[in-house]
Image 1 (cartoon, rainbow, N blue to C red):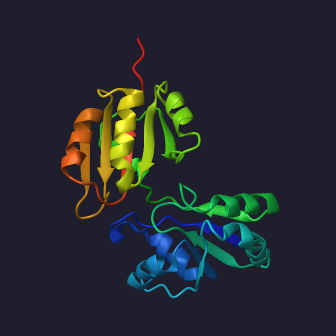
Image 2 (image 1 turned 135 degrees about the vertical axis):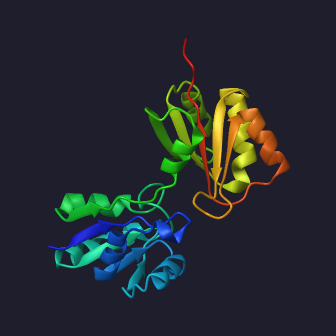
Length: 225
């Protein structure tokens, strides 16, 4: 019986790759990559010559049976995403679940994921928090906001840069303009930025400075009396 390794990769700075992650990728029989072009740069940097196979949200459900067969035949497979930990708002869950159901061993290495530094950087309470990932695009978005408006824990939300202004405006509608938030942008990269303040203050900042790059928004929970 083989084994599936879930291998986190840097969210920006290539130095955040662990020694163990490099060894696992070198020793694996196959690397499943969300985008082989993106991951190819990482593998080249660390001189990893393991064969890659494209594994993303559009094909993962079609390839699970063949991958399980390879694992059961004794192969070691490593799963990576473009950045961070696979299955956290990235492909990986379906294959992991299939392995668990089929008795194939799964091991997830510790490593980079965007929401942890964003949460710690924010200065907002982090003893209790909820990870929301990307909010629904249209259907269910308003319903989700109505639920989150009553959430007392700190909330972590992923937002694409071209939707940040719209999302912050929605925060004002559902959370109020004085709710404390932190927008972390380009974490671990050269132009990392953490903008803290009320929703209104942060919205004003990004209205004057167009947001770019990968973004994580941390929102303070509802204050209860």
